[in-house]
Image (cartoon, rainbow, N blue to C red; front, top):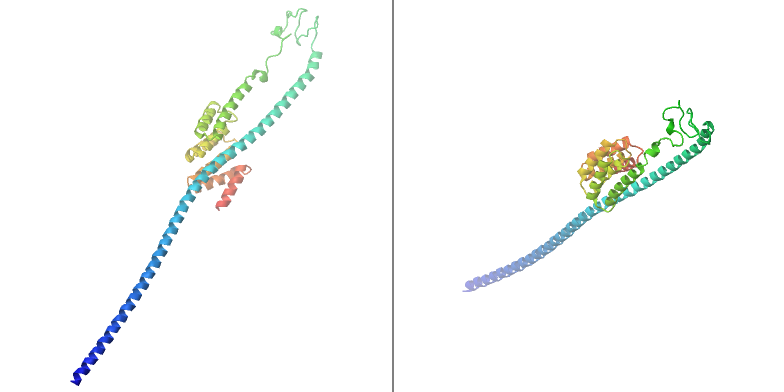
Length: 300
């Protein structure tokens, strides 16, 4: 009997110990699960924060890309405006020089005519009535040519000599004025940003006045207008036309520089470098060569 009670007592004690151990294991498991959930929540929050940061950066990159494109467009317009200002300054200086040369030439002609008039009057024979006869001819008192006079002498006395080149070309200034007006009209379209109109105007000018001193500049502006429209291949073709048709023009270095810029925009960096090197080698004293050196230095 005592033995049975002892066994029962031991059994109860063992069961109580087992139940206590099981209860402890459940609490430990719950604690670990809670800690795991907390870590997972932290990791999830960190991931969400990183994703939000990446999205913010991506939006910023898109905005920066858009701003870069706008900046490039503004740079193209500014480059065109600078080219216009430089060209206008060069044209103004050229007109001042031409005006000075023209005035100097006219003064010299007037001085020469005044110096030659007394000598001509002193060397010409006079006839009754105060008329002057042409040297080598005989004139009557009435101005008629006497027998034996040189053929054509009838028109020599009392008339001016045939028109010289300056007089014969009296219509040329008007033509030059019309030519300048057409050129300025196309340039004005370029200034206003009407690049298709500028291309059409300068193209018409080059076709109408291919030998004009302004033709190389007109061809250059055709290429520059194409560049401003981001039609870089057309810009390259237009500038190569200038180089082929007007190889001695002072616009050739600028045309090559425009070609190099267009090549860069097309991603042809090797071609752009070769063009810059060509400018430096063939036109070392030009402003375009200085710009080409800067670009080559910046890329090296």
